[in-house]
Amino acid sequence: MARAAVPGSGSDEKARTTLRNQLVSCKSIDKLIRESEEPEHALKKSLGPWSLTALGIGAVIGSGIFTVIGTAMAGQKFDTPEIRNTPLVHFLLTHTAMAGRPGAGPALALSLVMVAIVCVFTGLCYAELASMIPIAGSAYTYTYATLGELVAWIIGWDLILEYAFSNMSVSVGFAAHIEALLEWFGIHFPLKWISPAYLPTGLQDLAGKDLYAPGWHFGFNIPAFLVVMVLTVILVRGIRESARTNNILVLVKIVAILAFIFAAASFVKPVYWHPFMPNGWTGLLSGGSIIFFTYIGFDSVSTAAEECKRPQRDLPFGILATLVACTLLYGGVAIALSGIVPWHSIMGDAAPVVNALRRLSTAPGGSGLRWVELIVLIGAMLGMISSILVFQLGQARVWFAMSRDGLLPEVFSRIHAQFRTPAVATWVAGFVVGIPAGLLDIGTVSNLSNIGTLFAFVLVSIAVLILRHREPERHRAFRAPFGPVFPVLSIIFCIVLMMGLEVLTWTAFFIWLLTGLLIYFFYSRHRSEFSPAR
Image 1 (cartoon, rainbow, N blue to C red):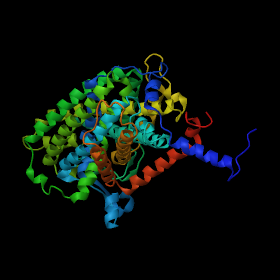
Image 2 (cartoon, one colour):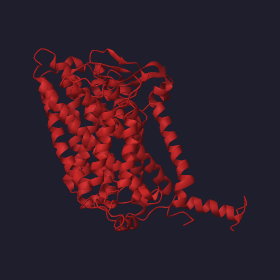
Image 3 (cartoon, rainbow, N blue to C red):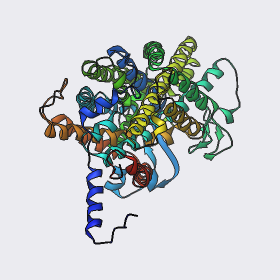
Image 4 (cartoon, rainbow, N blue to C red):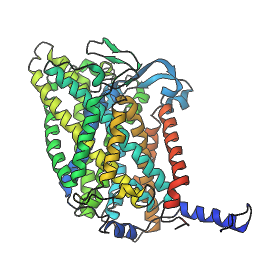
């Protein structure tokens, strides 16, 4: 029988040293690539540059342009000022509480430019790492190869939060558009089965009449749950089928976006753009922080690295093309939307673009917009379906990669015998997203996704700097320009945007990370390949 270590003894010191070494142990990049090619864990390689770009656009456009853009523009209001609902930067600078988060107003267009600049810096870092380490797992895998096992676990646990809450947010927005589609055809479905059970600001109709008081009510958002589960089935069947489905959905949604922009152009009232920054720089930063998670699309591109035919060339292309296309489309919608309705009138609206068209269709000369509304409705719904598809793909691949490394139970890395996809991880991810999506509102679920996304981007940028120092001679098919400038700017700007999120989000984020650390120290580290027991 092994003797227990005596506190202060040499064996106790050796145990501490061994644990310390494990926490900072990094996986060899060459070993990561070899493991990904083992037959029992190998994924089918079927994606090219345009499929990767479509995956990115599918994630970015569908998740925010039709849903969270209203919250980013109008913000959120609560009955009384509370510290927990106050953006962290505001509380640190003024030591006062706010009654919710301020929106960017018409200045959301500037918020999107700011977010796009941050995403360019971070996207170039992702492109450099993804071309060097074409492995499933995205930021989790990059940090395992650069920052060590503990940080890799933290970022993997963070990515689970990021993807799960991103998809919950999009699913809630999808349900709101289902409701609008039913209304278009004159069908009135019981609200309790198509709205979240938790509504922190209540629920109002287009005339401002209260339908539900703030707080919990009896009900379940059935469309939000069902859309996740149907797409889970598609993802289990195969990445090629999923990519083809996504390509079609992306084309339809781009047509819908352009239809909205051109139709809205005739109804723009410049008076709605004044004041341009109604909530000042705090609102500008808050708006960018609220909508930032939607740009996670280029992160989703990197999670599909193992299923890419030529990752060294195609991954950088897919990431950068996603950023350019989505920034242009987002900017057009933000300018048009803020010019056709008062910015504060879309607070709490999970379908702001469609509902803005509905308001205009009742105005003089707006009858023709009824058909534009239907086109945008269909495009928005298909667009959000593509977003959920990509986010669920990314989340399952993170579970798969962590399981393959021993940090999560082995069952999550099992590959379906016929479809060659991580079926168990995909099904579990489906239920983890679908059930909360039926209960929570769009503002609540998007906040945690934002902070998780930004935290992941910070660590990816740090990983670029470390890998350049540690392995300067390793071949890089793509390299972020201007030396350390872009990675450092990415780190700074991501932290600034994180400060625009409210205190409650920061608190929940730290609770999530603490939970993850407990799981790591009591379970994962004992099953890791670097564990002394192995």
